[in-house]
Length: 161
Length: 161
View: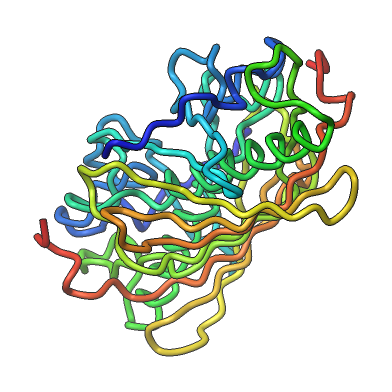
């Protein structure tokens, strides 16, 4: 697959918010989902590891749900960042979202061994709440549909251990 | 937490269906979710690993979605197995389900470092389709709600690589 996400919003999450198992660049053992603009839509590309199977030959649904989840929060962040007058790479810290709800419809068994492409459409439903509708493709075949409602992360999340 | 799932349906999935990254006993690198009866409800207990964080102190939502997913298919399998006249441990192979759809509502940030308890209520909506409503608790506090629609795995899933 020749498509690459060159500038990802997760590359610019503040360090304190860059530990997510799904998309945190500082979580060495995580999936490192990276989400960027793709025209007016958003794009995350991910190649599941061998272990991420439902059974041999097919990708585990929980990984697809994870991809849709972080693609959703990342897409919301891209949209709000742009609304705030910023683009990835301009040096401004990007906003960080959390997931309020996640829905996944598994349309087809997802084949293992190919890169998955999540393509999202972002809608603002409130200044601090965005909806992201996502389609996940394997070999350009639609395998799953998802919807994330993402809200700006409350400040109480940080250093609240 | 003193509660333990003694007899889990995943312990009796046929070998060919025991590779799931979420709940397959043969997937050495997986989560090994195990689901059993808990009165008339179903129970899965899981302790996230350190790396499974959203940010320090909180569990990653994709892991909670994964827990709800496999808890859902496992609960459906428990219910159909019982309907077929079997109980876990009687030597009969258990039925295997796949997830048609998954919904997760994140009610509260889920604290890291404690065992999570998923408790499910199973409803048959068709002889081959079950709905499982799940609540996920940390320290007996409700952190997430989920719904899985699970269908009996089609035979085309096996050895279809």
